[in-house]
Length: 172
Image (cartoon, rainbow, N blue to C red; front, side, top):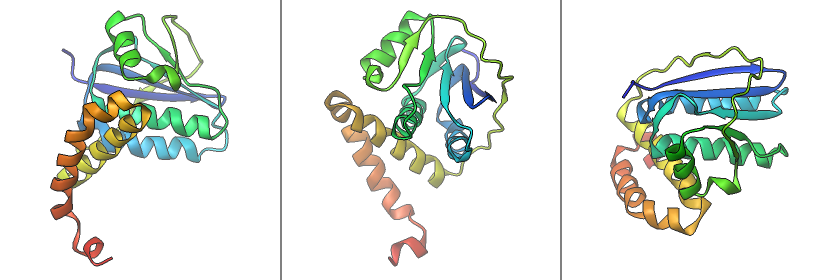
């Protein structure tokens, strides 16, 4: 499997997020920073996930995709679009309950957005765990099946993150 990469671009308020290869949690903190920056733009109107080149997407990445979809819907946008002709990818999205958050199409579309690689820095252990925890909490909030699937993982991560809290955070 090809090592993962996230390509991003925008054109006339439509943000395109293209996942390439095997996209894993090592990209999560940079991806999350991009999400915050994307929603900070006044011109944001829609988001498209291009999954045609994705070979694999881990649950942390799926959680961040769900976060984007939820934020877009809360902002009054239409459901984001996910483009994938791969039956396995489409089944994964369906099994996770993404049908409530995104529209899925197998079409190839050009949105006029030139995508460029997202500059990803390797996260420190604390940041990575925090992003994994946040992403899985989002997945759990989507439906009861996800809640059951990820309950033990989230509980374990919460226990692991607690002693890692920075001293200033413990005092509050």
